Image (cartoon, rainbow over all chains, first blue to last red; front, side):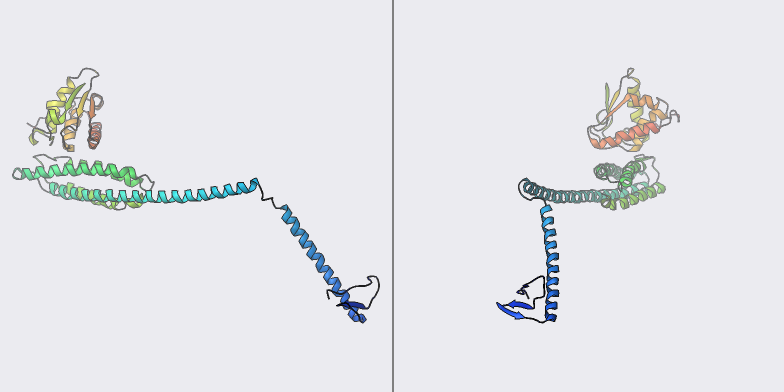
Length: 224
Length: 119
C-alpha cells in the first residue's frame, strides 16, 4: 500500500492510485486504508524519535581524534608494559623461591646426616667408659665428635639466615638452641677425661635431642 | 696488650678438664697460663686470647674449667674477668667457642668452690 495516494485529506475520496491506474473503492476499504495509514504514521514517528535519540547519544560521545588517540596509545603501551613486567617479576620471584627451597633442602639434608653421625659416635662414646687399652680409639672418637660438632655449627649458620618467615621462626630458634645444647651435652662433664664413667642417661639425652632435631629439619623446606 | 695464643703458647690440642686428663687440660691452662697472665696485667690492660691459631676445636669441659674456673674458684669476678679478656679468632667457626666462653663465664658463680689441685 506504499503507493496509496490520498487525493483529498479533508474529505472522503473513494479513489486510490496503483501503477498509474486510478481505482475506486467502497467505504469499508476506505476506512481500512485510513487505519493502516494512521498506523504507519504512528510507527514512523516512533522510528524518527529513536533515530533522534541515537543521534543525540552519538553526538554526546567524546571526539576520538587528535591528542586523545595518542593518550590512548600510550595507555595501551603502558598497560602492556606493566603486564609484561608483572609476568617477569612473578617468574623471577617464583624461581628465587624454588632456588631457596632447594638450597635449604640440601643444607638440611647434609645437617641431618651430620647429626645422625654425631648421634652414633656420641652414644657409643658415652655408653662406654675410659680405658687406657683403648685410649687411641677413644681419642679418635673424641676428635671425630669435635669435628662433627664444628661442621654442624657451620651448617646451622648456613641454614638459619634462610629461615626468615614467621612460620620458620620457631624452627630457627630450635636449630640455634640445638647447636648450643648438643655441644654442652656431648663435650661436657668428663669428656676427654681419663676418669670418664659411662652415662646411659647422657646417651639417651643425646639420642633424643638428635632424633628430635632431625625430625624438625625434615620439615624445614616447607617453612621457607 | 699482652697476647696468649692457645695453639702456639699452650697446646695445639687443648683437651680434658683436669691435670689428670693430660698436660693440655683446662685446669693446666687456667693454673699455668691464664691465671698468671691475667694477674700480671696492668690496670686497664687487656689480655688478647687467640683461639684459632693451630687449634681444631675445643670441648666444653676444657672451656668451662679453663675460663669459668677463674670465677668459680674466686680468682676474680665475672665482670673483672670479662673486662680483662679480648678473645679473638680469624676463623668464623670459632665465633661459636667465643660465645660459649662468655656464656660459661657469665653463668659461673663467684667463689662457689674451693680449688683443690688434681695433680
